[in-house]
Length: 149
Image 1 (spheres, rainbow, N blue to C red):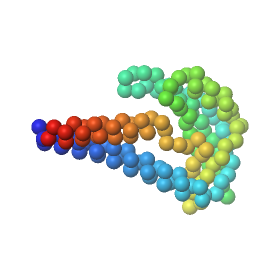
Image 2 (image 1 turned 90 degrees about the vertical axis):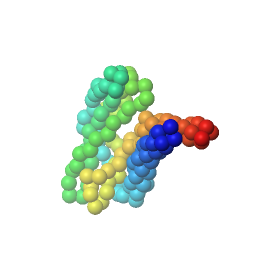
Image 3 (image 1 turned 180 degrees about the horizontal axis):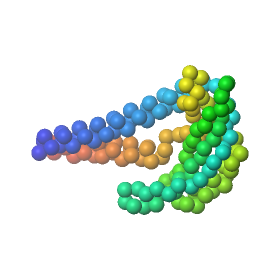
Image 4 (image 1 turned 135 degrees about the vertical axis):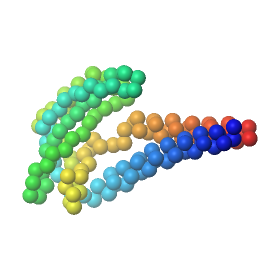
């Protein structure tokens, strides 16, 4: 029983550490991008995609493509706008709010101009929820495990 508890605790801790690693890596890159040159991107495509989660529930996501200029070339990028409601109405509003031709702020890495961040790049709410969920499981499991052993 103790060995099983230690294994379960280790798995939850490992999942949380992996999620935390990717979150911190993203935040560090995003913070570093504040020193990168900024340019204007222009939305060239906006469409809604329909995906399904593991429970076969519909997920509607607003997908965008844009172009941005850096010294010597024009590059393309993309971003998504999604929310926890995953509704078609939300995705349709996002497309309507950002029609083709709309400008956006793009910061690009001067050493690798194809690496960029837009004003829409943020850690998704779902990522935070996963982290908090596994962290709470870890705390609850630890409390129960150490309370009874």
